[in-house]
Image (cartoon, rainbow, N blue to C red; front, side):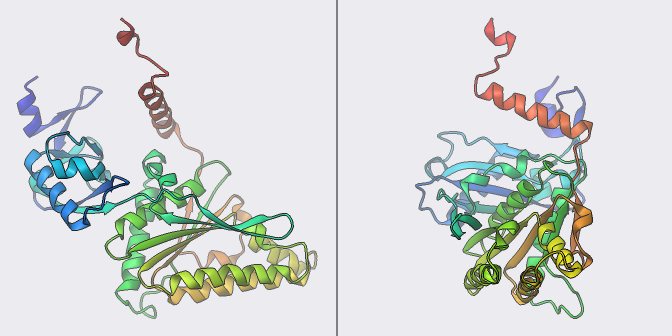
Length: 360
């Protein structure tokens, strides 16, 4: 096959099918994520310009995935850039299609991974962590978004919603005319990746909004830990937690993403308290949490992500607060294949599995 012809007209896929470029009636915005080396002190604008020049010079076709950084091609990039990745083109062009360089405008997001371990806040004799705090983008979540595979376009749907909600808030859109709470609820059986998806979404937002917010934090709340065995202590835990959150959101240059895992423990506790099977302290705690979440609505730099393993246990008062309610179920055949394929590829990369052809 004529490879020159393929470069200009189409790409041959692994299954023998040829992918064709999208018709060039309009330009599409393509997100490019540039991860800096840990020791780099380069200015983000300088990196953006260097990467854009490199990509224009290569006249490449644009599909999701990493772009090789060729040593010697650009000394500035060699010294400062760890990796370059094209993201989310599949939501624009669909399967077996790609974009050519004259069809796109680049949105280059430059970031540096934070290598610190998460901070934690513990309470009581048992020292149960009430929340963990990550500085984003974090090395702990690097590559997590790309590793998650789902049946539907839930990842793109969540990313578009979250980005739009933050832009609306930042631009001062009238909430009386267009109402939103910036609250997301992911529900479904355990083990389907709800918490991982929330963490990955937080990482994505920190990268995409790097030019708007100079720093970003993920506060991951353990809902169970907010209930103390000591009467009236639970209220103090909630107060302390949200005091910390309000401290963070006071800085308008900081993006704060709150993740409440297993949120059904809050709402089910309120129902139990109303029925008389739980002490009144529980209902005060739950109402305090909901009130505090409502109070964060006026802050433009906050996003709340929640997960639940038991959909039926979430009461209507909380469900109504969620702008997006997405079911995350077990993967079907195609996502299972993609998950297994990525696992095999990683084992091959690590040298644990070796192709018979390579063994000679």
